[in-house]
Length: 246
Image (cartoon, rainbow, N blue to C red; front, side, top):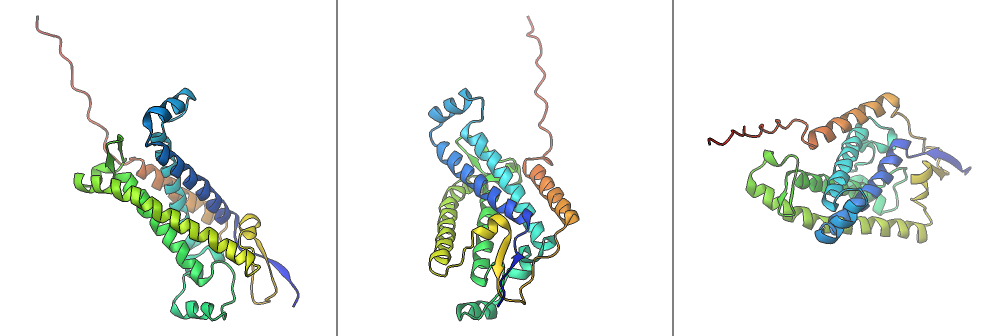
């Protein structure tokens, strides 16, 4: 059959992927460095930057915006970015395991990895937004939960990191397996957007135009604003200081 190039991953999906990689790495490093406050605060402040915890919180807000964008883009984006296209039922999963699935985008097993990673990241962001630790750090939405939940969120936030590391490691190993064993480069299309196929039934992605992109960006921006405490009531004014009566 004649081979041809088809568009699989639109530009917003690719940008989401690589920005999420960078911000997740940044969040992991700054979260790790936050354990040594004395040294790292000196380094960050001397460079005119943020403390590790401040930088970690900024990375977290960035990830929050990316996740919000991806959830919207999973509905209004182009063909292979949509959840409805790659979220599979048992029949498609068994067909894939028998080697009878032929398609583009996420395969049925890869779809579970995507959904699992998004769920873990959303949980991680949620615990970070409401936590109250002795680092000291208080999440912007801490007032929405009880003190017990806020304290519990600290431990959950730390523990979930290793689940995320495990899932990311599995994802990287899967890419290597497909490249070496199945001779199927999954990484290259995430850079270029295109994949070479020989099945005439496989078509390029459609949809996900500028209007859909603007809607997704507006929703993501609003979510970041809310996550950063945009709807929180203003703090009470400081008490008036009266002159000493002497």
